[in-house]
Length: 234
Image (cartoon, rainbow, N blue to C red; front, side, top):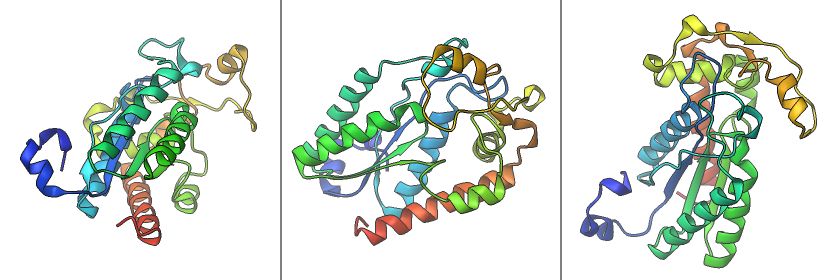
């Protein structure tokens, strides 16, 4: 159920229940994937999770901080403070409307810390249960390593997942590879961004396979559902 498609009385009839908030970005993903790849994947996962838990799907937040790829046309690098205030306001309004259990499905690495800070504050202020997870990093890691030994931004794994969801949006004739080394620790430097992202991707997108992408998506969904059951959120 999408909250924005419900009438007011219908929403009132539903009562308190688990809500899912997808957050993505508008960012260059190689030359072969859509700029909204992070948003498309996050929204797909949130929609699937909501349907399997009888939850409510909140409207997607499609922008995020994208400093590393801001030099590539098509990237919208939104200020992290603006995203923090916006997400915090959405969470506060969710609580005010009786939605005090929220799962934030994050599709973009630049959002991670911002979402966690907002969730922590809202949870304390409004006695909420809020889960924040990065779909590519926090769940189904064993499956991901088995399916995609060399993952990366717009690389084999992310491209495979997008192909499983919206193959019509991919231009695989333009798929490419970039094997530039990525720093093992967090290193912030404009020169480092340029060195890593000599192309707007990491890994080899040419090896993508939608069937493996579908298997990863299924594993992510099942692991999140197990977590929600374990912590009695569903």
